[in-house]
Length: 356
Ligand code: CP3
Image 1 (cartoon, helix red, strand yellow):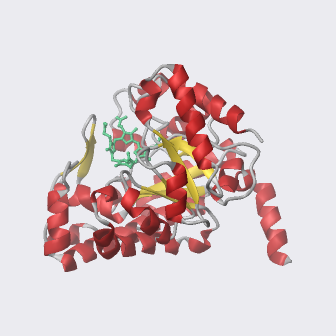
Image 2 (cartoon, protein in one colour):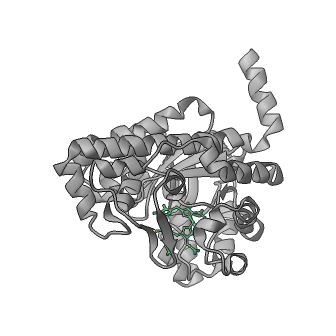
Image 3 (tube, protein in one colour):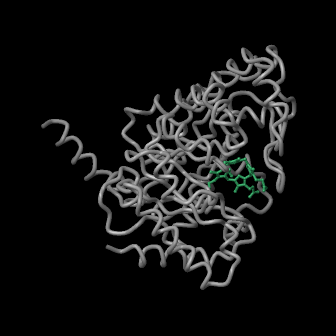
């Protein structure tokens, strides 16, 4: 009884906890399919380019007022059903002592890559005080957003390790895989430490009031199921299972993960994010009947004529009906050249076409 009352009191105070987005994540009945876009806050928006002018990416991530403004821009413009906190997956790693920068057009670049046992010493434990600006940004945003849920996020150990070991973006992840297979003890020590940092970073966001979290393992799709299960899944599971009692849905996303969808669900996700290569009905069969799915319009479809966009949106919605819950999204982030007006039209179409 007590828990029921506490539950409804919490929902009353925090309407976002019973939003259409959170309900879809939990597989509960919804009046329409909720929609948001990965990288919705970013270079596709002129208002973003304006406020970011002359401010380096990492500096922007450390200014709560700016983070709040950028996070809200796509909500105001597109009417999306959730906002994702404006930050980056390397923010907690930088806060834990790694010298890195985010270079425009390239991505994260690490001054001294991690290749040896001794290098690991440069990666400290993360304390909440290291990321107080994230706590502050979330606390600014939550009351302002009211019924619109805020999604917190972090990078998963494999994807973070890839940036740290390679020193920057990589097509093959060759050095990362060489460590994984050749120095498994060092690999597991590195990923263990990253899992702790990620878990702490997500706990800070949950404590500050986010309504859901997404774990980005963007580059895990480069692995076979066997290697994923042996070298990666235990570390991602440590993060996701560490949030089991947190009361917020956990979304687990990767790119090109058709061979990994079952394992990524098993890692402890309530929602599995799927890219455009796997139809959502196929994905649902792989992740099992207890998990919702998120996705999966090809971001390049947004450059096609509107009748094609409309047909593809309707196809994704139809395939998503196979799942107990569907959150509409792209299969990866919004590309910077995307016309924001098309995104606004997609939101309206998803709402209208899925109304029940
Ligand atoms: O709207 C949102 O999705 C929230 C913000 C967000 C950013 N990065 C902002 C950002 C999120 C969720 C991320 C996650 C992220 N960062 C991932 C996982 C998601 C994915 O894309 O697979 C990865 C791999 C990174 C690392 C990273 N940071 C890359 C590859 C890049 C792009 C480099 C470029 O300039 O093209 C970044 C920089 C970055 N992160 C930008 C933004 C808006 C662009 C920087 C800018 O606007 O100057």
